[in-house]
Length: 94
Image (tube, rainbow, N blue to C red; front, side, top):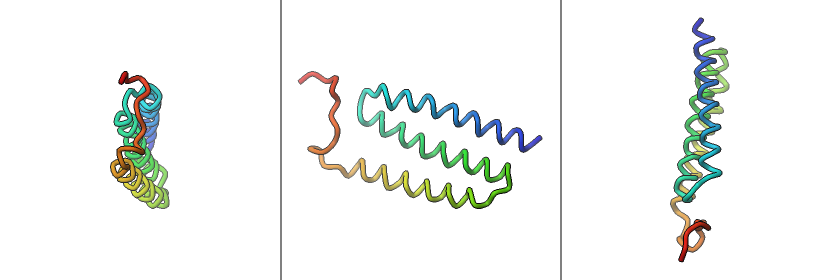
């Protein structure tokens, strides 16, 4: 019973990633895209932790921690980009 509930929650989180993919595609600003990528990171970690508990696989907890570190590095790299290297919005008019 509990395993089915945890697996169902993991499937729900994976469905949220589809919405995040739409936001990455549609934009409209680089900040929106970056927030979607952060959503990917947190949703992936939450899904892995749910599956680690549901399937009794403690190795997934370590993989989730690696994803946390990668998401942190990615967000820091985005914030630290110099203004001339940051992607511009092609839809904006000068």
